Image (spheres, rainbow, N blue to C red):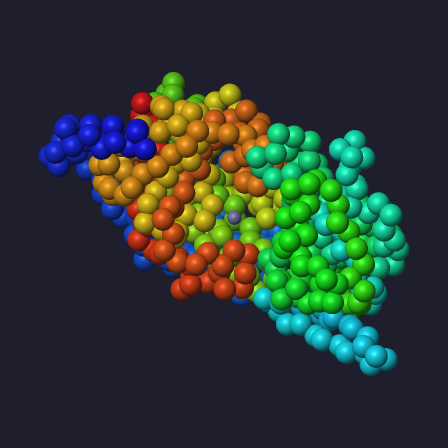
Length: 490
Ligand SMILES: [Zn+2]
């Protein structure tokens, strides 16, 4: 990046080691060095323990982890800045408990014989996090993206009878992100819409293509569903003369449905209990600035604290997002323990119910406990723990925010450092940063680039030993701490 080169050149010209001490007080350098990968990994391991149930929004495990974070903030002397002078900002979140993985089975009748093929979790199928409890055994019908959009001249259900049957559809929509009218398709790309439409058309069950845990589908009353992987999808199409990938591509290309009966049946079993009156929370703390005038201005750092829960199999959520939480905990501790605080205040938000559809960040921007006009920026951390390079995504749109971080990187950790302009997504929003951006905040995201390990996204194998490179967490946290320190003193 051009900017990167400029900063690198400046730092070589202006910053021999001896000058660092003048710019960063010794206590600040010491505090940065006190951030260690050992502590960061201890936090990550703790958050991944089964007692926290994958930190699913609404679960008891989530309440436990929220208390655990609040206890740390309290020990360090970080001030509570949630509701009524507590660390918590509470809001309703109906929660579904998955009691067992359930079943997905393919049923084919051949020359009078019934062949049943059961599948296994987690790679062949994955239980629906918000399925109703029940058993459905019925004919399977392919309905593309599960969309009926008359004003766009598109209907996956046109001329197709799905009453009492199981429908198979994909996420997103026929319009890819480069389609000129992609915005018009956004409401139809929401999981919530697709399931509602399937129910309205009379479907009894859904097999959703793609085996990831996906708690962002709302509770499905009177609908049983599961996620299915490539093998199951391929076997559903056997004998139809069609191939799934080719059909999907043809829909993208022509924006015309390709729905059809798959001429075989499936059985889905789901065992769940829905808790409609659950409460969940964001956790909020603040380190007050030292300047009497500037301390009202706040730099807000956030990471989602919830995970994908335990839908019949534990999802530890190590990279996503125990890493982001650990990163900002260490930064919170380092600021709280500084003898001389920066001029502006620094606040921390551990966001709840992100995985269930960005509920916690939406709740905060609609009910801010820190005045929006005093919030200099929101800095998001999600999955910052796997890679060789660092980034501050979105910051090219705010040079005054980018510069302090690029400088911290150039002064201390010397990672490849990238950025990008801030953009409100044209497709459905998928991060807390997008929620803040849409609400009118300056919002950026710390990222790790040049991945070196698998990500195992929303998969039971997102474990600390599989998906994390601890050194990048340490460097990301140090750059975050020093970048915020620079920004807070400008
Ligand atoms: Zn995440």
